[in-house]
Amino acid sequence: MNKIEPAFRPGGKLSKLESVYDGMETFLFTPNATSRTGAHIHDGNDLKRTMITVVVALLPALLFGMYNIGCQHYLAIGEDVGHFTKFVYGLLAMLPVIVVSYAVGLGIEFIGAQIHHKEIQEGFLVTGILIPLIVPINTPLWMTAIATAFAVIFAKEIFGGTGMNIFNVALITRAFLFFAYPSHMSGDAPFVKLDSAFGMGAGTPVEAFTGATPLGQVATSVGEPTMTNIVNHPISLFDAITGFIPGSPGETSMIAILIGAAILLITGIASWRIMCSVFVGGLGMAALVHLPALQSTTYPASMLDPVMQLCLGGFAFGAVFMATDPVTGARTKVGQYIYGLLIGVFAILIRVYNSGYPEGMMLAILLMNAFAPLIDHCVVSSNIKRRARRAAAKVKEG
Image (cartoon, rainbow, N blue to C red):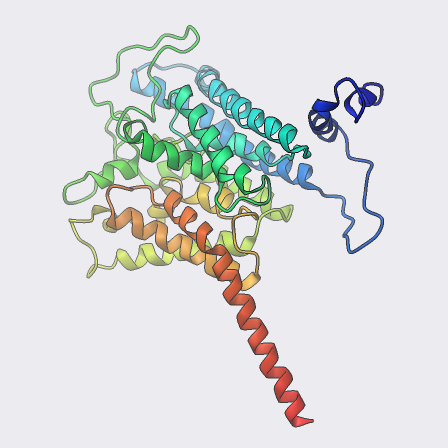
């Protein structure tokens, strides 16, 4: 790297690709340049290490998601195969999505860095793996590419790049797909991959096949909500916790998500205030709508057990990996409690009382992303007023 560096610096033959060189160098090595004066905090952690830690925390959900794709596929076609075969099928199904996500997102960021002569940031290391985890496995690759490009350009780059975006980029990708191509984001088809993949043939689906997510089934229920798996067996709380149900690859297993949460909390990367507040707000609202006086056959989701509400859909995944995004979330300590509580409350309200949006978590987080600066402003203003009154009282006493 040191030998080729002069060619990329001003005056060199490849000076126009300076940001590309810097991106590769800082990805491989810790930068030697550090601040020597001014108000700076010297710490062993940096943005690159932070992003890599989040990627490590996502690995349990990613690996289980791959395995579950294979499980749902072979369950749907009625074939009994080994665990390794199931995992390989899921790996081959997800790999193209991951490649497209990174190729499009990083490509745009590299081009943007070149145009604006800026350093390439590591923020998309996490976004690039989040996108494949939250979109249905059967989403066409060209749709994923368009949605990723839209999100990176209009939700990130136009705001100034990493650290300046208002909305979570991965959720904007999913929101774009949801509103632009709704038929590919709901129903039976998107969540169970039944086509041939890389030479691995698929048989004929069993007669009772249904690929709709549990929340999708609840939203379309008439009367008492019903949730069944691929072979029409009832889905239990144990199924929802372990994750062997249809859904987006990274959102089904509560166990895998909690392992990731533990990694983020132990390393201090994520805010425990936001994470816990989301679960508290969601559980409280789920318990409230579950009260006998508020249950209604018109809103079947209100009849779901409160704990089951938190285990289904993207609630847990959103609480751990999306709501805790330090860029788009609240910064003040009190604001983080308020921010998290409102996300949990709105997620349950949306999924219970609007059958058109049975998931709820995506819209709740994006809504609170917009209000996070206002929450922090109100908290800071309240602190300033309280301290001003305290100072005035001391002057008066003196």
